[in-house]
Image (tube, rainbow, N blue to C red; front, top):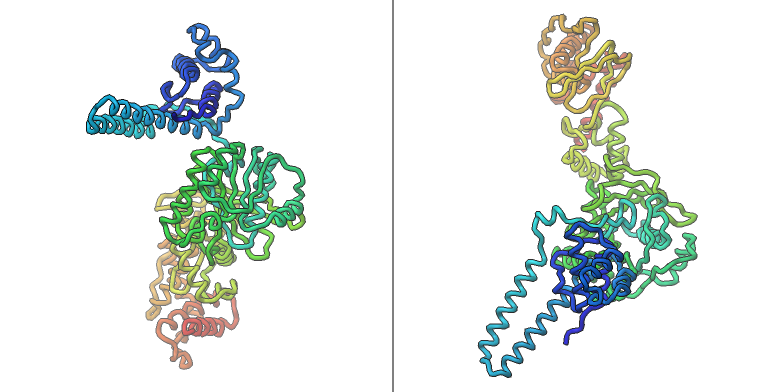
Length: 594
């Protein structure tokens, strides 16, 4: 005889009495006792009538139908709610279904035995058993799905946030480089949940018991850490330092449903994968942990390492050591990044049930704990190395060379080149010419604006009225301005005739034209200003320029660059502008040859 799971049936009926939705595939037939069958029928009938169920309503309805004694009496109905744990409802429903299938199988075997004893042929009995097996298989498959019309109308329990806005039921992976404070963070999580306090000083934690598998530590070390964090009193959370198998962990959690959170430090210690880069191994191992979380309705959090140079990744989801299947299987990924020895760290969060968020953390060495000092959901922080380059490029409104960026960051030329290439592909910076870089998001136009300014985006003007006198205006990529300096809104420059490009200066004109475009001029204005500037410059210095004998060793494309630099430094009022221009040309040539 197959033993029934009476406890699971009682807990399930208790949850239904408290108003939780009835799971798909659950009906009175799956219950093993007459009392439970009748109680379920009454609860289901009340639900169909739109009545909210509770103990009094259910007892009253049973009396009306004359089935109160068949339900075990009013005391039995009231006792159902005493042991109800709504968070484990899904697990209990699954246990009831499995028990029902086993009873049906036992009935089939018993019927087959009786048929053989009555003299039926083995072929006939086998055929009957096969029909029953097929019927049960079809029924089982149907029970695993749900019609969309039923799904839309189905009421689910309110999402149970264990850590406000960060951790709910399911599988979460917390990754970071070695020795940056992941285990301290995990311990903070366990203590916050045990007390029902605040995680990282800000995020509200729901009070519950946790199981902490510290597989890389000893009880002595955990005790010291708790003392440093000032934790002296606890409720029911538990520490384990010995490895459990996946099956053993599931059996333990079934026998101890009070543990709502499991923290595993570390993933590799728990799974023992032979090849972390093997996709199938990674997915199978993570899926086994996710199955425990989903079946029991709990949160499983695993600690894992990041690979080397992961701080250079623009996407934190690519930082975990091993296969991409690790983060793909998890419901939520939390990545910690911290410069070795620094007090600040950044925590990136992405998941199926959480908003993509970036938290700034500060390490308190006195109590060995992390605290949130800032957060943002709209603009996640860049990796530290990329942010350093973006800050440097934005320090002045101009184009920077690769050599200048190398000197500012202190990194090798190869490392900077790789970063710049990656940032360019990600759309973070611009590369107007080989070896030249600038910010992409915005630039500053250094002209004076008066009554109003038209900002053009995709050739469609948008007017900024009542603009105050200012020396700068931030323009987004693809926008330019048209100055209005009189009441009628017509530009005084538009009536000025276009000067011709002096002979032999077409290359210098190209440089000047592009420079004016970068400053925010329209193409028409840039052409006019470039022509006039070159004409004025040649009128001042005469026919010298790049025709001097000592400049004959310059390649042709550097001579035209020299012409333009002389023009630029002359306008800036630099007395020895020719020497400065030549010095910059020589530096650029040395850098390119290196």
